[in-house]
Length: 347
Image (cartoon, rainbow, N blue to C red; front, side):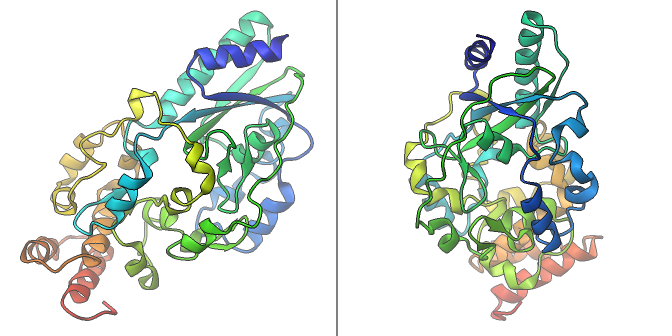
């Protein structure tokens, strides 16, 4: 049976799990419309740019009948280590997915290999996606039986938690779909309660305007003052909602060596990272997803983290050395950090 063969091939390629969903009916269309209407997408205009192509696979890729959803685990750390790091104000916390090689290339290559194997077995048209197009990857993964969307909106697997990437293959083959998993969050609200900025405004609803991952990655402007102190030492993304999810006790460490931490980013000192010139930033983070935010946003995020730390002479000196930076937005964050460290709690 081709469907079972696809899963076997996928696992041989290193995917943790592979599932199949039908392209019809539309995918979470009403939920997306409500989320956009509430302005929860902040300035991520691309979320509404493609209309129904995002929720109707056959409009994005003509002839699509089935969607293969693949999971790839990435975690190379333990919850205890992560919790400890979050309480070390002189160290940088970087979302665990971004510590190693950029997953886009690895996932795309694996998905292409799987698609080619399918096409060699049964001629078909296909297209692969790795967070690179208007694709509702989490709702599609739910349909494909890979898990359910938790109250933090991330996909959760009963057997593997949520520390994984997702990728898709759109196919013009009519394959039997897997059974969607039921939601097993129950009455648990751990992710909602732990969120530093209360970005999970209701179960299954995340307001990006408050989310640390959005504020430190997607956002290229100023971080609103009311959230800066709440960011702590998180300089790229946030994992708190996953850290406290009880289902992550079943998560397994990844076997992918490409996802192992590079450049000691899993425990780096803030001052060391703040000292990187733009050339050093680009060189040190070559092949990393972090590189895409650019050096100015990198410095902005670290300035906020330093402002949330300890007012040592070394920290004050490092911040003052950037006061003549040509970017006015960055200078404002440095002024905020200095003011906060020197006794003005409001920055």
